[in-house]
Length: 171
Image (cartoon, rainbow, N blue to C red):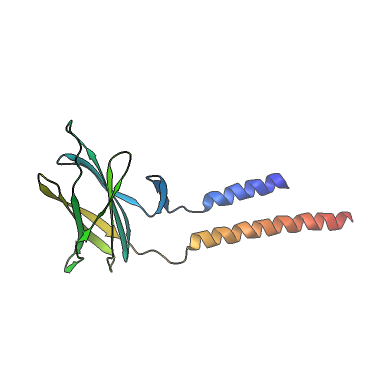
C-alpha cells in the first residue's frame, strides 16, 4: 500500500508544471534572461519578469577590465511599444557579492514586443542599451496545477477506499 502510494505521489508531483526560476538566491515566477554580454566597461545581465502590468527588470553589472569596478551612478529605464511609451523610472541599487544589481518595476498595459531602454550614467560617460522584451499575459487560474491536484487527490481517495474495502471483506 505505502509503496504504491509513494509511486503515485512521485509520478503525479512530477507532472505539476513549474513556472518558477531559481536565480540570485531566490525564486522568481516567469523570470527570463533577455540580455547577457559586454557593454562598455561592464558585463551586463538583464533579467525580466515580463507580464502585463508587471515588468520587473533586474540588471546585474560586473567589471570587464582590470580597472577598479565603478558601477553606474544612475540608471533610468523605460519601455516603448509603437506609440506607447512608459515614463523613465529610476532603478534602485542593491549591492551583491558578484557586483551591483539594479531593480525597477514598470507597468506595461498591453502584450507584445516592447523595447526596454536602459540609460546608464557614471562619472565618465553615459550609454544606452536597448533590449526587446515580450510582454505576456498569464492565466489567473493555474489549470495544470488544479488538474494535477485533482488527480492526486482522486488517487489517494481510490487507494484509501481499496484498503477499506479489503478490511471490510476480511471482517
